[in-house]
Image (cartoon, rainbow, N blue to C red):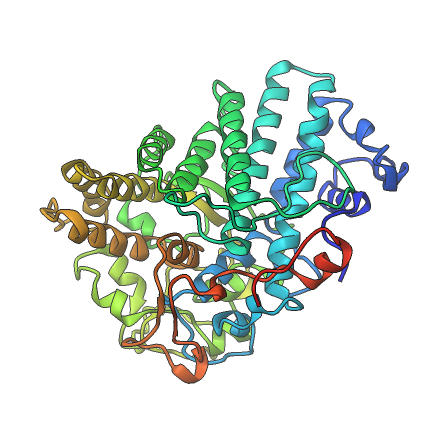
Length: 496
């Protein structure tokens, strides 16, 4: 495995891998002293290629590994670490050590390595764009839009990582524990880890600048690009993790403006098409960019013909399933019997109780192509509802926001009369049902300082092995990859 962070050669190699439209010679000019950067960013047209390269990096394969398909690897990891996704068997082994809570606590394992490498690669490329775009030749509006997207990508990457490698943010403390190495310019300098508070300060500052730069930008060409709504959605996510309830509610409300919730018919179409009106941000995967067995849908769909899906279809926690109303469209995404032939399987695929059909491959059993959801309008309703409920004194407002989403999913839903913790609990059940399989559960458990509890449901202890983890335990922190510690003497490991 290669060194991860402090290498300009790595950054240029990553950029080369994701920029098929850039001229090859740009990346062959003094690659180790970054001389090529000036050529890449001479014009805004080339800088657009760089942004598109980052978009593309979200679903390319890393390290020649089947389980490392860009952002989908993180999404699957986050649900494998939670209690709401159930593996009925060990399958063919992919993601099993993550599910068992051993991989992320091994400094030589793939989960910490990938989640460190992937996001720092994005940061390295975003840093190049931010450092050079102001000097590019081209329209000022293009410069602002490109910079805004790069700032949002950098903030998102740090936010994704700090929740893994650092302690949870707690607004009642100084958050002085070790966070991440902050790198805001193209550099090879070996730097120590900053505090959790310092990392969050960078994230907030970047998103504030991103929102400013993206405000008033022309309509984006497609939902793989980050616009001001997505930047505000990211700001809402960050505020929720920081227990900044007013900002979370405001940003989530603003983020969803101009978007609509999908219909119930669209809800059953397989979550594989980013033209869905509810998708705010997603990775577009087209037929000539085949993703084979490293696709999100090679593990999470019901129908792609992979060994993993044939032997180990992904199921929902039975306790969560039982908490969903019988008239809710989401209830129909899982088969509690394991015998309903309306639920697709790949040829020769096994059936198990509570198996899903939420995710369907865009190409059926023969192709793993499908767009990957990264942000949807429903999440913004849930953030606003949760933030208002937790703020205190806003139960009626929180219930009203929740009603808009819940009524869309369940025609028999009535406005909640719950208050206090009962209302919060109702919102969180809605969140778990709505966002199942989309990569949120580990993050939610950690930010809320909740324990892992897989007992009392359909988890097979022989498969999961780890059935519970106390809140606040050191196991909630990913270990820093050994390759990073070896190459950066200024960094240190998390508690073993």
